[in-house]
Image (tube, rainbow, N blue to C red; front, side, top):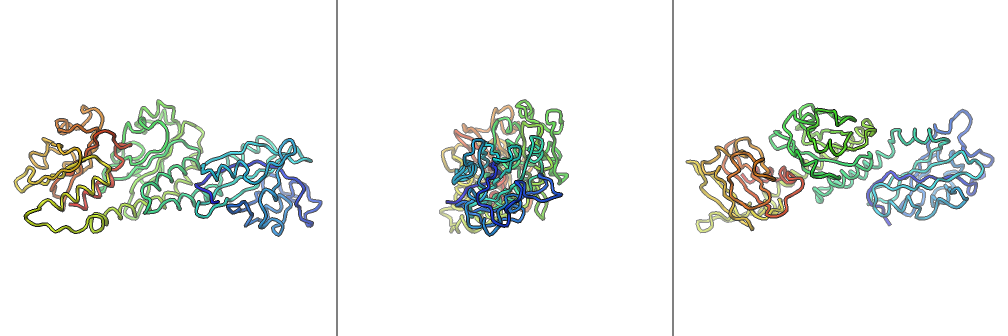
Length: 470
């Protein structure tokens, strides 16, 4: 049985004498030798999906008194052999810590304290970090704690091993075939590994204009959708776009750089935003947030910075795949003759509708004298009409600013030029089509009942589609 996802799962366990090798006889419980304090040594081990030990470090042998020869290929619960307060086995096959990982939880805890029968004040703790599902198993740490202060110090310290295990699982979840679902899993992993509640993915528009909220994972979704677009220098995402370096705070309520008042009202206190960088520049950003004001921003920044490279690479590959699909793959060559002049446009439109998961849409192309010269429509919403297009590109916000536009919510919040558009849908996308910097048309999409969440979820990919279609 393989394990799914990743977690930093604490399984607290003591040690019983059974299973010690002869070379360790007479060694005290801490087993770490003179001149070494109990909290200064940490042992590492690796188990497979059946809990059999496949790696056992020298420090793990010192802590437990069990040599590698006696530990390898044996179940971890037999080697560690933890007891609870009543002398019963705390380590066992399918222990709560391992069961949580098998169930697919990103974080699971076994709260059973275990004591060594001859040293009730000393505990040996075992912390498990799941390896990627394809591999299964877990990486474990063993460490001694003798007091509550020691325990909180270890828990609050930087956990390099846990970060590396989380990074391995995150990287394995990012595949082009599973784009963009893999990115959502990566955000979940980051939340659990850092102890935060919410994660956001922003992507830059193709021309590098604005940051668009593309994916959100966490509670209070509507509060985070209060603002879904950030211009360069605006808010945390906009600042990261310009400065190209991480920024964060543990005092979000008092921080004027954060612009979503509804998120502040929900009690969020900690926020971290890290850029996603490719050779061409910043392609987006990942942001983590929490209502806990004591989130360790340096520790979260370390993991997020490590994770930014595989995430950025996966996003760049996914966008490249979209371009290739439009250019030569998904849209097969179409023979256009005088009897079917709109066949190619219809093919482009239907491909765009599929990518957007939209109910209907239209493509409007402009003539040399301005105004719409050709128009094709498809789907349930074939009645999209926009007065702003009657004179060509002038007056259309999507074309004037070369932005993708998402129209949602009350019409009073829409750009003035868009408020007289005729359509009964819950949300609209307007995507500029340009050739050599010249506006040649616009793609309009409509969601009749349910709108994407966040509203700009598909906008970045659709801008790529529109650019290649032009």
